[in-house]
Length: 315
Figure 1 (tube, rainbow, N blue to C red):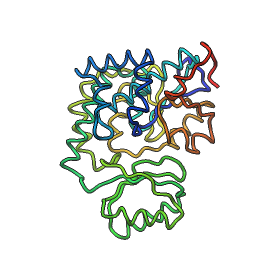
Figure 2: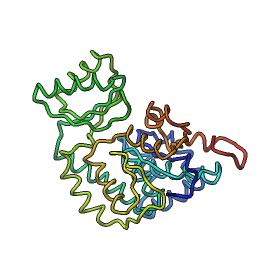
Figure 3: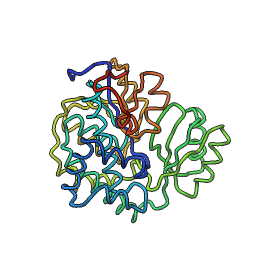
């Protein structure tokens, strides 16, 4: 176990759509963000900020790399400014890459290369496969009502997979697109709230061929090491302390359900009282399975850009 504060863990959120206006000022001003961006530019051979600024679609490689930079720069800013010393870390979905870097298992330059190439692999795969599959998120749907929806899909002989169990009443479910209107109606009929629809979909066992491609072409080329900070896996709450475990964690992000309540339960079981969420987050640090257990401290670009005394304690 790390020699950090045993009561504190750091979480790296899953990526959310972030227009350049949301992150650009921080990326241009913060010294750590600027240094990491320079490494990213050298690694990829182009200006990631320019690609981010000029992208005509969400979740471009430039945006993904800039999100990764933001999350890690905020964490290091908190170390210097707020004396952050976590004993554990966790990532949600895309956040697993940032967690692997922060924990010392993966070099930042390799993480940048992985992020950009991973994006290419995903685009190429879904251009040819599963064009009729989407992932729908919805809230205010407790597990018994969610089970009713799944039972109706089973009775209709429809395929589905649970992409994310975000909270006790918050889910992301992958279905074929022709069932999307039905799903919206079924959720609303049970008092639930359909939210956003994701294309391409994510976290499903049927994407095993994509996992195999990423393993063969990308992850096999990484110089992974045992993390110096334990990582709590977001698929089952397992504590990852080896390079092999980190490798599996990254690859499992393609095919396994994110089980955020399980990860939060593991943190609580290790005595964590404070969860510092490093990066733009509108979800993972806000759900009840996190807020009911921990004092959640958001680290955002706005927080880092706010004038403050030189040293303060995380509170």
